[in-house]
Length: 247
Image (cartoon, rainbow, N blue to C red; front, side, top):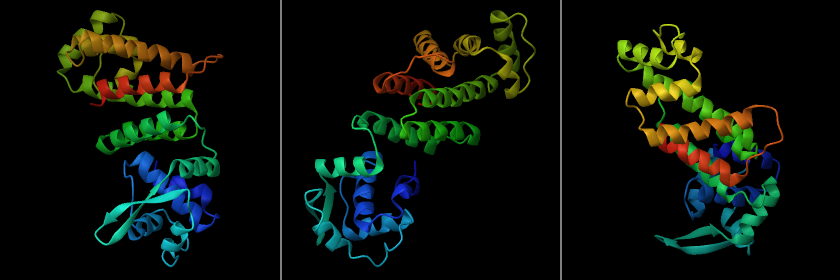
């Protein structure tokens, strides 16, 4: 998620609300605990906040207690940080659930993954997962992240020796067609794809087993039903998939 996306719901709010939300974004999604007035102004400009260039941010922050506090100095400039009451205020402004900290951590981790991915198609899937996480659509986040992971696994498989790839596929699916390009792997069941990836040495048995569990969760989330995973379940899913496929 970008700062522009995060601040967009507040585009008609007072500059003070945008200051608080920007400090929240920096703390939760970028691991930046504090900022000077000029650093904050730069972030507000990057977030396309009207009036950011001319607003008296020092005055806005000074009048925002107890939602902000000073956190030492950077040179001669005060560093401003968001307090717990400030976090609650931003959650209220943006209608974020109170138990969202775990999800925010996952969003931050997936943002890091996106920055490392060179395959645009895979990155797009992960970006969709981030959007879903950000609004609490956990089932959809699981589905999109898994789709990105599968595409990444397909790319890893197709990068191996073609003869070995096809011999491995035939071992687990005798009716499978000959694979010549990555899109041919879309006809291979994902459960079989994981076996092939293990057989080719891409994953070890433990990693394959964990990905099989992740696939089971994806299937529960991707098919009609009453099952709804909680934040901890989704967080565990993200940790496993990111740690195994994208590490």
